[in-house]
Amino acid sequence: MSFRNRPVLDRKHRPRWQDELRTQQLIVAGFAIAIAVAIGIFAASAWSDHYEAHLRPAAAVGDVTYTIDDLTDRMDAIGSGLQANYKDLQDHLGGTRDAVIQSALQSIQNAVNGLASTAADSLVLGEVLRDAAGRYGITVSDKAVSAEVADRQTLPERLKLSMISVAALPSDAEPGATPTDADWTRAEGEINDIADAIKGGADFAATAMEKSRDTSAAVGGALSWVEADDPQYGTYFTEAHDAEKGDLVGPTKDDTGYHLLRLDDRKAEGPDQSLKDLLSAAGVTDAEYRLYVRGELLKAAFKDYFTNTVMLPYQPQREVAQIFIAPQQGIPTAQRRVRHFLAQPLPGEADQSGASDAEWAAAFARAQTFRAEASKPDANWYDLAKESDDTQSATNGGDVGWYDPAASQFVPEFEDAIDALKVGEISEPVRTEFGYHVIEVTGERITVDVEADEMVARLREHPEQFAQTARDLSEDPTSAAKGGDLGWVIPYQFERERIDAIFDLTTPGQISDPLKTDAGIYIFKLVATEDLRWVSPNQLASVRQSGFTLWLSEIRDGTDIWTDPQFVAAPA
Image (cartoon, rainbow, N blue to C red; front, side, top):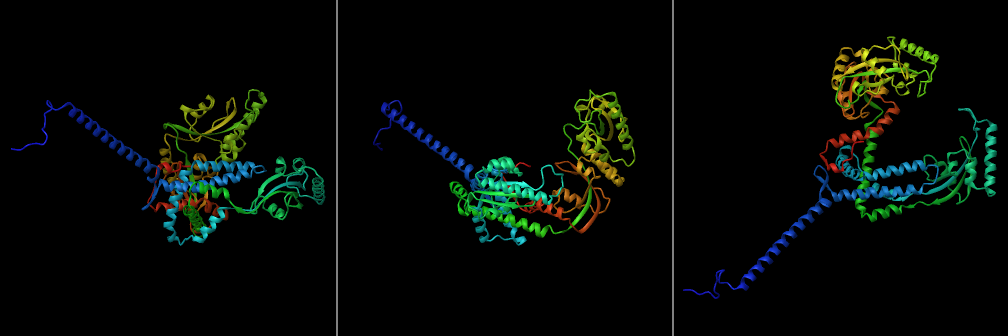
């Protein structure tokens, strides 16, 4: 037999205080559990917020991942430079280049608005180029980084200048005239009189507004701040460099006349304190800023490699012609391609209702003459239509695009004439409220894809028709006017899919398959090919500039890259 120290009562016989104590214990336990759950939820929420704001991946290159914190650091480094540049440009306002400066300020503002995508691309491209640098023998030394950091954080010496200019040629001189000795003597006398007047107390700005022939006259001759390497005013910097504040410099003879400078103020070379303060305020460390600058130098080094090693003066080339078909808008329907010539009784007038019978008769005669010329076998509408009174279509061979009866903006007489014509047929002069039209239907289609396929099939049977087809149907006015001729094409001249399609052609006369792109459909004809051919300097310079991004894209395509869509810039 055993005994309990305290009797255990059933619920019926337990004292009331014991039930109350148990209830309180349950309530306390419930609160404790609720608090624990709340703390857990809060902790999980706090961790989730911290992860989203700091640790979430923003981009990755191979095995290297960049977090939101990395992105923020890069945004701070780039943004600080943009803000410092913005402030510096604002300090340059108040001169003849205000419009240019305002445009630059707007560009900076646009860059700030797209800062996240710029920073993400900077991180990704920097890693891609670091990985690829060894393959191309490209390096960026610590010394070069230090020099670039110092240069970016230093403002050059600047002079604030005003100018009065007197031209040798009189204002009523004929275009292309050359100043005579008498013109130079007169100009020299004028500028000397101006200098004497200012030295005698005349107001510089008022004198500039009255007598200067330079564009700065409108702002009292103010050129604002000028640097030694200023492409426009660098020579003035040199002329005024040794002057004291307030000094007049000159008069000095130049290519067009004489000018007189005044040194309004001077800023010595020194640290860009604004940039340093912005970097410090944003918490950008020296290491983070150097990493950003190294990436910029690496990109510049790759640009030099592309210019001097990839884009040599001799390149493989293809001489080609093209036909371009623009994307079709809306639901595909039967359409007809139309071009026309317009002869107005009152050329250039919006309202022709006041024209006399004689003026209408003259317009009709012009239209008949055009029709006769346009009906000849070798007629070139691009030449003939230049005399059309429809100035919008005149430069495009009279082309007004594809005519959709369901969405037409043409007047009824014009539409009726289109409907009555067969492809290739030229109408008699058609009178509308705008004048007399001579109309030709050059093609018809249901969809652009069918049009392109049929065009390729037809041109492969008759490649000699390519030039005429390009003139009639290509929707790139520049090449269409030349029968589609693009001349000699070199690598990186166009985006890769176009270049690949062109360089896949090997036999002169060969017609490519339709190349369908976001921009539209291209059809190419190979005229000639050269494995290595000298490139014209203008073409080489243009492709060295524009093709670098295309070359970089090839390097990027060989790397496993991911960027959060939130930080990918929208297509231009």
